[in-house]
Length: 165
Ligand code: 4NP
Image (cartoon, rainbow, N blue to C red):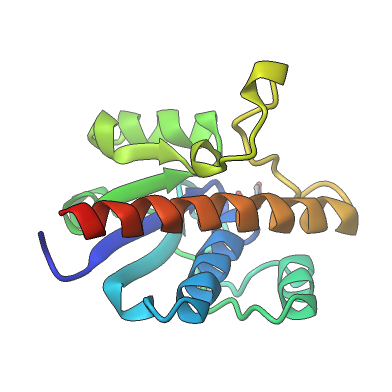
């Protein structure tokens, strides 16, 4: 196994959901003192916002929770990214389909919410992280909470796999 596990969080614009996922994951890994075991980045399947810092509402919700967002938006680079990252963590089914259309190996594209152990799929709770871009501040708080549950579950899964491997 390589020294670090590469994780790429992917959404559509790379200014709302995936920068939050990246920041939350880094924050949780830092708290658990395992930050150095992971290579973490985020990107979008679209390129409209390339070069931009996260949406102000994403920055605000993260700041309220003491989380920094290091992201500067970029579009996915299939050649480099699919070679470099072990896991491509899509925010929703549409992002997942787009990644596979771009040539990402199916087995490495995972829905981030599938790692949330509290997700109630029996009650048809969606695996999508809803896009908060066109909504209000409460959408960003809800996405932040979802991503915190999902990234905690993701960390648990990855650390358990490393302990076994
Ligand atoms: P994200 O949200 O995919 O969570 O970053 C969006 C941001 C911008 C746009 C769409 C979604 N947009 O169409 O500009």
